Image (cartoon, rainbow, N blue to C red):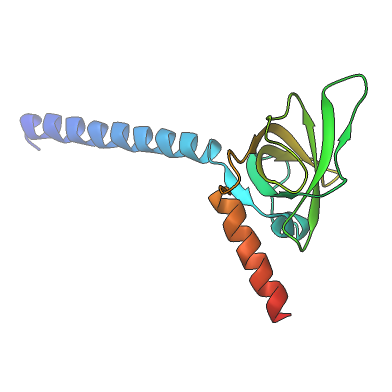
Length: 147
C-alpha cells in the first residue's frame, strides 16, 4: 500500500473512532440524567426502578400529610385514584402545596416501596395541572370506568 494512502487511512479511522467515543459518552451522560415520570399505579405495580432518579405525581390524599415536630421531614400520600404511594420529603414544601392538589415530586424509590423526594413541585394556580399528572389521572379514570 502506498505510504500516503496508508497515512490517510489511519487518520480517517482514528477520526471515526474519536467520533464514536464522543457519541458514546454523550449517550451515556444523557441516559444517566433522564427523569422518567411514573404514576402511583405504575409505582404500585413495580414498574418504577429502585434507586434511580424519577418523577412521580398525582393528587395529595386528604388527611395524609404527617409532619415531624422536630425537623422539616414530611410524609404524605399521592394518588391517581387507583393506587396510593407514600412520599417522604425533607425540606420546605411549596406555598401552594396542600391536600387535594396535584403535585410532581422528583426523587427515587427506596427498598421499602416509599418514594423519597428530593424536590416537590406544586401547581401554580387553580386551573393548572402538570401535564403528566393530568394525563395519568385521565387514563386512570378511563380504566376505572371500563372495569
